[in-house]
Amino acid sequence: MAKTVVIVRRATPCLVMTALLVTGCGGGDDAATTTTTAITITAAPATTSTTLAEQGEILVGKGDAGPLVASLQFLLGCNGFEEIEYEGATEALVVDGIYGNVTGAFVAEAQQSLGFRPDAAGASGRLLLALGAACDRPRPVEMPPEQMTLAVEAYLDDGIRDRVSLVAAAGQTITVSAEQPLTLGVTAPSGTVVAAPAATTRVIVETDETGPYLIEATAPSEGRYRYTIEMPPHASALHLQSTGLDFVDFGDPVGTTLEVLVEVLGEPTADGGWTRDGACLNHREVTFGDDELVVVFTDAGAGIDGEPTFAAEGTEHFAAWRVRWPGGATSLPAELTTPSGLAAGDPASAVTAVYGDRVEVEGTTFSILDGIITGELVPAGDGSEDLVVGSMRSGAVLCPGSG
Image (cartoon, rainbow, N blue to C red):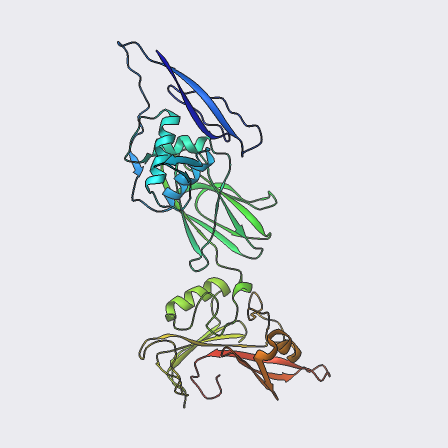
């Protein structure tokens, strides 16, 4: 007795069918086409039984979340499992790192298609290897800007490559760190191999190009592997804002603030420690570069003007910044600007051109309304009558004249 089962899925890439099911690969170069394959299954005689491949130990199942689930979901999509009929509705595969009912339905379909014994508990390493062997493209990942670190997990053996694609800008640093030795390699957007594959636990790449960098990992033996990708933002993304410095806000703890700024700008050049100077509130000033950027911390709940700072009394926190025009070479990796592009060293005309009626210029000082950024103007020094921005500052007033 024979029956025909019709399976409809995306045509590419081709799946290797094991046990009972063997299909051809259709669809040509058009990844958007679908293929309908009629498979005739002939019932075995009563004296024999059909044996499906055992899936092995389950790694992830319903209720699990994290980078390995995201890897599983990507591999399902890469193998053509992109839509499924679930409880009367068509559900699309979503790579969100959460193993829910819909992901479970896709796993069940993959188990059947690949010839594994059905297991509602979830997906095993053998299933991940089978999906990985048939996937011919890297999975795109994004770096959360507030974290600067991305965790990646994969189930690998010596014949399976885990490949991820991460967009970086020229001048950034990509660091790949593995918990166990892996063969790691990095390729630039142009195709240039910037880190040749080598057995290691750490690879550091200084980017020269802007675009997607391909990070590849292979393992010496079968198993579950985890590695992290670190990529601090380019220093040009660190804007001067009335609420802080883009990746850190006023009110953030001292340690968190310094950790982020060191990742972006490098080690500080000076740290004055906690002090009280005359009329100043208890504060700490940390300098980056040739005195261009100074970040200020306090444990006061209000400034000397009586206005509240950004945390409760007694809580050490980020309270102010000031930036100066260096007037020459700078050790900072990039110019610090406001989100609108105004920087120390710009002419006074640029202040009004950028901020329009939101700026007030009085003599040698200016203030940007709708915020608390203020600054001073100094002669250009080149014989012109124009003035340049000598400094800008924002945050709590901790000392007289500190802004």
